[in-house]
Amino acid sequence: MSIEVVLLGTGNPLPDPNRAGAATLVRAGNRTLLFDAGRGVCMRMAAAGTLPLMLDAVLLTHLHSDHICDLNDVVTTQWVMSPQPKPLPVYGPVGTQPIVDGMLAMLAPDVSYRRAHHADLDWDPPVEVHEIAPGVVSDEGGVRIVAAASDHRPVEPSLAFRIEHDGRAVVIAGDTVPCAGLDSLCAGADVYVQTVLRDDLVSLVPAQRFKDTIDYHSTVLQAAQTAERAGVRTLVLTHQIPTPAAGSADEWIALARGTFHGTIVFAEDLTRVTTDGS
Ligand SMILES: [Zn+2]
Ligand SMILES: [Zn+2]
Image (tube, rainbow, N blue to C red; front, top):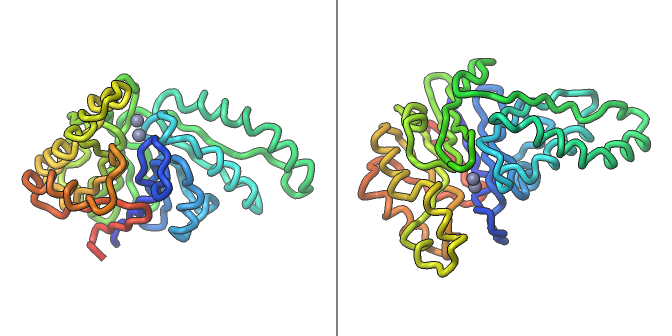
């Protein structure tokens, strides 16, 4: 059974009319998993044929705003569409609990309005937070999820994830530079999804705040090096920084091509990749 990956949002923090924020859907066995919940995630989930109610878990790579800013929409939509209380497990690094607590505090007026208006909606959003460390996150229904430490300092801790099912493996790296934890997750993976940056372009922008982003993201070349070292089959470039010019996909792919000899996918919103190439 193949694992399916849908790049729901491929944007970076700067708003873009064609790219939603960081979010990736993974379907493995009978599990539907959401990795990060950036801008517009519920709209893109609908386009991918799913809804928050159908999620088995949300997993957060790190707590940067562009990866979590629409988590509240996932929580609210899951809650209002549930015929009965259905827990929404949210896995994330240490620090996830206070983020979710603050988010639920922000939602408290809305929760009170809806509970007052709908007699059958007599529970609060049932979010279950699991703050996790590197290691096995879960192993249910033939789907094993493993986390490793990534390196996105000063964002600490940050995590990358490997999803395994039926002999196949997908890695969702999140924002990170190459590191040992990422290498261990990527070893032999079928699909490796990496957020990437072009230092050749970002270094030209006359704004130090933008240049600062170079030191904590993988460049396209570094992503290719990680992919080649680990022997992955398909490298997916996402969350591209800077926002790619129209028609520039081949340019980005060419930067990886000299180093990585597998399949390279330049992700747009709703790009779909599977472990069996279907
Ligand atoms: Zn980040
Ligand atoms: Zn990011």
